[in-house]
Image 1 (cartoon, one colour):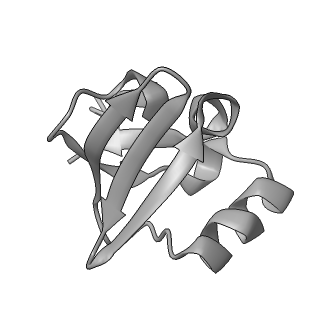
Image 2 (cartoon, one colour):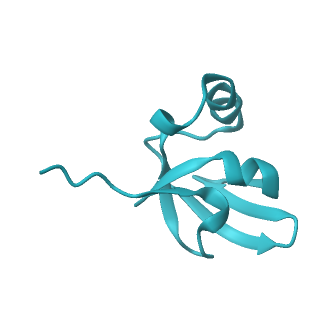
Image 3 (cartoon, rainbow, N blue to C red):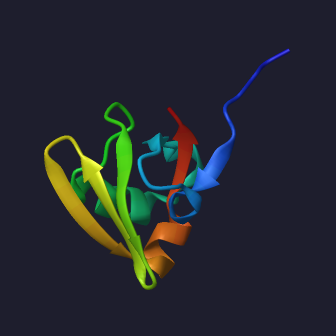
Length: 79
């Protein structure tokens, strides 16, 4: 029996929680956009700050602000 990690929307993570990008659950166009921003399925994404209109995530040394609509489209697996 396979124990696949649960997939979540990035916007649903709590502050300080880490997760990995789930490239299987994201369409190709969005995946290319995220890769250009610095997302990777090898480097964990950490939620730094949540605000009414979106989230700020940390990827390595970079900090990226995402609006709520985009954060809802990004699928991640818990680290």
